[in-house]
Length: 221
Image (tube, rainbow, N blue to C red):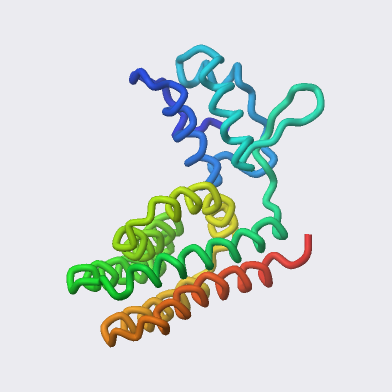
């Protein structure tokens, strides 16, 4: 199958460009779990040498999105429910920490951004646009990350979130999304009322409940 996102690269930072393109393709499931990856074929599609492709694949392997198989072959890592469960626990704790740091510092413009992101999320869900819905959800929580101004939280999340996002996309249903919209409304309300501890608890519950629901949908594997 032809991959629309994989096109010749014209910029100089080949390794980073290949890495970002492949990572996005894997997260969005354009490159399917367990799909074989040939550095030779990828290099031809990108219009570059095999070296930056190999470097990008190694970086993706370090992040758990790609895995090497016997015989020097490489494939997209399969979806692993147990791994995702652990990831949700960590992500929930990190976002709760960001909310704890940010909640006392939120301005009216920040709350307006939360409301706008949640509206975008609702509209994307109603339209059945999975990718846009997940991007809107990310924008909602990014408000707390930006206000918290702790780069270590963002770095940790950048490494873990792709494992969760692949699972979200593969198991997306409107019921899950609409529940998330309502949970976000509760978070916004708590922010407006300066209920800082409640904000922290609601943010953490938002992520943990999503992880539990996705686990129920997938069942044991």
